[in-house]
Amino acid sequence: MTTPAVAAKKRWTLSGPAQAASLGGIATTIAMVAATLLGLLLVTFFIGRVVPIDPVLAAVGDRAPAEVYERVRLELGLDKPLWQQFWIYLTHAVTGNFGNSVLTSNRVIDDIIRVFPATVELATLGTLIGVVVGIPAGVFAAVHRGRWFDQIVRVAGLVGYSVPVFWLGLMGLLVFYAKLGIVSGPGRLSTGFEDIVDPVTGVILIDAAMAGEWEVFGDALSHLLLPASILGYFSLAYISRMTRSFMLEQLRQEYVIAARVKGVAEWRVIWRHALGNALVPLVTVIALSYVNLLEGSVLTETVFAWPGIGMYITQSLLAADMNAVLGGTIVVGTCFVGINLFSDLLYRFVDPRARR
Image (cartoon, rainbow, N blue to C red; front, side, top):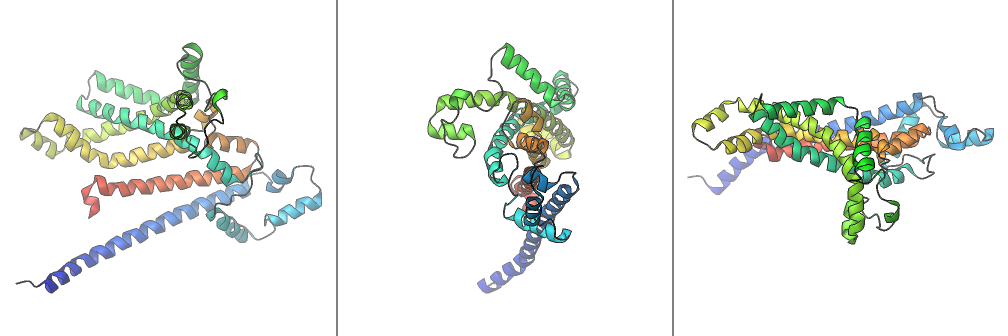
């Protein structure tokens, strides 16, 4: 007969290696994230040093006296060895100190906090459109492979990969705004609705709903629909294509054939079993699509005058404001690493094998 003490000892013996493996996996993940972020900081640091832009002149101007130029140069630490400059840059970046923007005269981190919610709002709605439409389209295309619906999905995906986003944005403005008047034009809000809602979260739809300002909510949604749909179309093209590929692979597996032989309902075979297994790689696809919209919406924000981080980095680059450019690049790169890490954690919920 097994006593409680013996049972507890067996449980400890079995859980010890599992706990060690879990702690080792956590330590490995932390080390990989830290190494990736360190590499990102290293790359941005050297980019800031090799570009033909003098950060001192960008800060003081061309007509500043020599003594002012030298004083600012010493304040920026540009007289120190390169490794010391990188250490200063690293310690400042870790605390969110990216310096001051030449373009706005504000701290770069304050500017990023102000403009980043606009990009998150745009990319989130675009990704939702891509997921809600792209996954069912990919599933139906795989189920009806070679038929007319499959051909439509494949052509739509090909167009989404081929057409330049700025051209599609301009055509969308011409048709839906200038000709039909269905949506509002460039910008995030109409002039009459600005400064009505306090920016609590920075996402106008949420702030307007929290304040009960439904007219502001409707105007913001009208401005958001067209650029989000443009980004959503590109996200849809990528997600539908990958969903179709994953589903075709799953539908050829033996467990699908066995389920059909047992008489399991076809909708259950497709949507429960096949799609359930295809969701594992789809998590990464959706995460990458979201990150690509966060960092790749520069042209969309420029065409629609959307005050997000893409437009902020573009304007800063044209003004030779390297503090703002590098600060925005670091923030976007950090989001890329964070969302990829989050997608890895989602595997535990999607794939039972990952829990072991």
